Image (tube, rainbow, N blue to C red; front, side):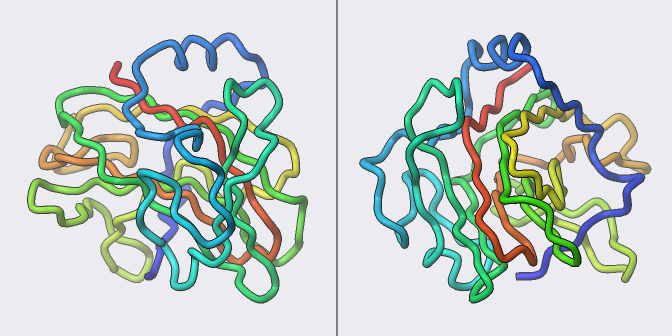
Length: 215
């Protein structure tokens, strides 16, 4: 599968917090992501899909997928997702089951991400989303630099730090269909799919406590 990184001007506005107050407030709302904390499992061994995360983003991804303990510090759970990439396989990832959405509703997506340290000439860990229409087709409302449709929009990209980092971003209904923005929900969106990936990075990355809430 090909993934296209949109121009910087079209990326989401990402707000990153080091404190706990906002993260705790978001966690108190209803989480629309089934198994967003990767706790609905008996910690399967490497090579099994976690419940509600049933699709690979890259060929052979399943061979490097693992649930691992301990989770991040201060997490309410005990497990996190590890994508155990290496020099043998440096591109891998998972997609969650499609989540029903209302294109007239705003949503907030937040979570935690960690990689394994800076590595020159490599990309890193990514969190991406794809909007899907009622006929289960990915929606594209932008083109990349090569004129090809963009169906994956990145919330976090090229992340390499070995520190757990909290991120949050908000999606809003489309305001101008002739000039859509990356953080706007397409009018024909019926589902949202979240993708956790490692791209051109031969070291493990970790993801935990993904939360999607209606605003």
